[in-house]
Image 1 (cartoon, rainbow, N blue to C red):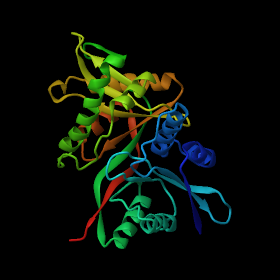
Image 2 (tube, one colour):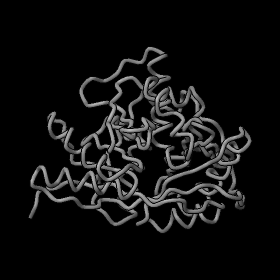
Image 3 (cartoon, one colour):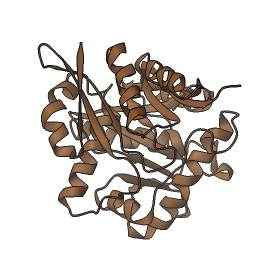
Length: 301
C-alpha cells in the first residue's frame, strides 16, 4: 500500500524527497532540476503564476513511510502535463483518481514507463477517453566525451543582448522537434519561455551561443544547473539555414565539457523519432539510460 503526499512549496518537497531523488539523479533530473529552479526563483522573490496547477508529489510506502516515487505538475504550458517517475502501479492509478476527484484532470502525462502509462490509462478510463503515446523520448548520459572537429567561430555564454533571440529560438526549437520527427507542429509540446525567464537563465549562466567566424549568432545550447550532481542539457537549436555545419555538435561538446569541469555529470533527452539528434549525441559519447514517453488522453473513437 502507498500514500500520496502533495507539496505546494518546492523547498518542502525537496526536504522530504531529496534523498530519493539523489539515489538516481540522472533518472530524476527533470523533477530535481525544475524543482530546485523553482525553489531558487521563490527565494529570489519571483512571483508564481497562479493560473495553472503547480505541485509536487511524494509517494510513500504506507507501512515504512519511505519515499518510493515522485511526480510533479508544474508545467506552465497547456495542457500542463504531469511528469511521473517510477512508482508502484497502485500509486499511479491513485494519482489519476485523486486528480479526477478534485477536478484537476489533464490530457498530458509524461515520464517514466510504466508509471506514466498506468496513470494515463486510469485517467482515460475515468474520462471515457483513450491513452496514446505522443512522443517517445530517451534519456542519455555522457560516458566518455568525444570532441568533434570544431567549425569556425566560438562558443560563449549568452548575454542580456541575446535574450530576445533566445526566446525566439526556444519557441523555434519546439516546432523544429516536431518537424524533424515528422509530426504536426505543436504535437509535442508548446514552449512557454518568456523574456523574464530567459533573462534569469542568462544571468545564471545557463545559455550558450555559438558565433561563427563573422560574429553572427548561429546556434543556442541551454543547460540546467546541476541537481544532485547531474546537469541536463537542452534545448539545442540551430536555425534551418545554419544546419549541417557542426555547430550543434561543437556546442554540445563544449557545454558538456563545462559541466564536467564543474564536477557534475551530463545528461540530455532526445526524441526517439529524430535520428539526427540521436546520432549526434551518440557520436559525442552519450549513451542511452532509459526510455520515457509523453502520453496524451484523447477522446475515444
